Image 1 (cartoon, helix red, strand yellow):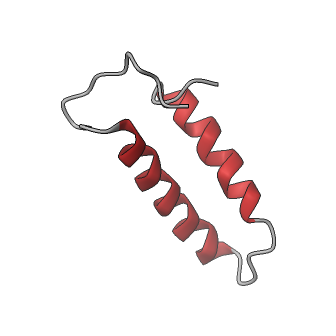
Image 2: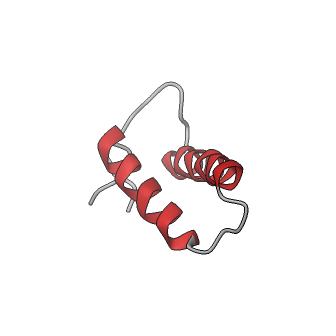
Length: 58
């Protein structure tokens, strides 16, 4: 799902960038939700964020 043409000096590997975003988003979500009932919501948000940042294809 990661775009092939994406190039950034800050990110050697787009997948690593998306995984970092996913981890940080998950941590933020856990702070607000004591009982994580919908982890798929986190995945959906991260996927949309990756697309918005131009890191991933839709």
